[in-house]
Length: 224
Image (cartoon, rainbow, N blue to C red; front, side):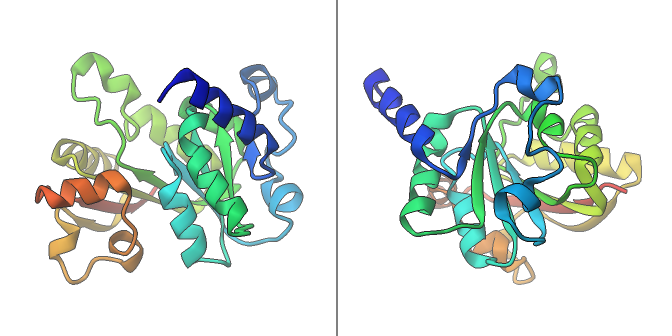
């Protein structure tokens, strides 16, 4: 994408009522007004709050919002020019139960209050296979502790990935920590018991993986 196009998207994001772009200082100094108040101040209802971490183009967040009108969704990504597509689609279709937050995943715990979130989706994250990249792996122990702070007791995390490595790594970690695994499958499209929200929504890249017969894996678990 050219820099001119990026700038155009950044500018358009600023005009979208469903895009929130706090700066780092605002978050880490506890000055972000929506922390602990997303439902009250932004969505203006008491519906369950669901996050998508690393939402990319926002396809999954938008599709989930369409499928579950009685839930509130926030897609989170640092790349605003990417989620511009999802934000624009939501605006154009008057989809009011989805928002987009531009920030780093590492700062998510500063953007939401303790026990504010009901559920999380992690969709096709970079598996960070090299050992020196382990600290950026979105299901490592440090990230799971961050998620626990903002998830309600019994809150659910969904991991959908094309990476067998990420799937196996996460399963092993969850077993080791004694967390409750609600569902796990390493090929959801060839399993009749897969949850509908896992198989009925596909991102662009996911459809490309499936064209090349690459299995899509999924884990649903609780961080007790």
